[in-house]
Amino acid sequence: MPTQTTPRRTSTARSASAKKAAATRRRSASTRRTRSTARSTARTTGQRAKAEATGLQAVVQQAERAVLIPVGATLTARDNVVETVKPFVQPDTARREVERLQRRVRTNLRKFERRGNTARNRAERRVKRTRTQIERELRQRRNQVQRAVRRNRRGLERDFRGVRRDVGRNFDRLTSDVTPLS
Image 1 (cartoon, one colour):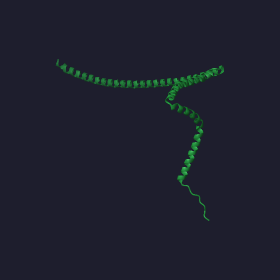
Image 2: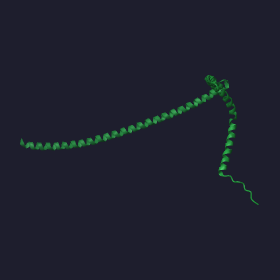
Image 3: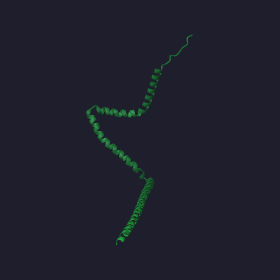
Image 4: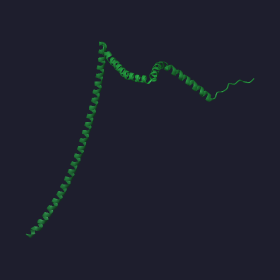
């Protein structure tokens, strides 16, 4: 009795099937996501298509856009203002909002004070370090100059004593030589 075998699929066939399944999944997910937006875009697309059908309608649509854009911007700004003012309408919420703002201001002031204090301390340390370095350098230079002056004075005094001694000897010799002549 011959055995019945199922035909084996090649890797190419498996890959093709996988690609088809993935494409189907993507289409399903994409379809679900875009159903709601499709309805609204269909409406606007239809309107846009009608407007673009004739040149006159296209011009009208551009004119409408020129009016509707500032209106939309104004309404958005109004909404932002209303949202900003909303906490200050009721006395309780206004008090809470003011207290919250005061806490934030106090917190920021403390931060600024700490930062300023840190900057001042850093600057003072830098000034003190620079002053110490300059004083040390001046002290070293002064000591070097004083040592050089002492060394030169000692050398000059030694030379002067030697010259004086030599002059004294020469004077004594000359005076002793001159005395017998008289």
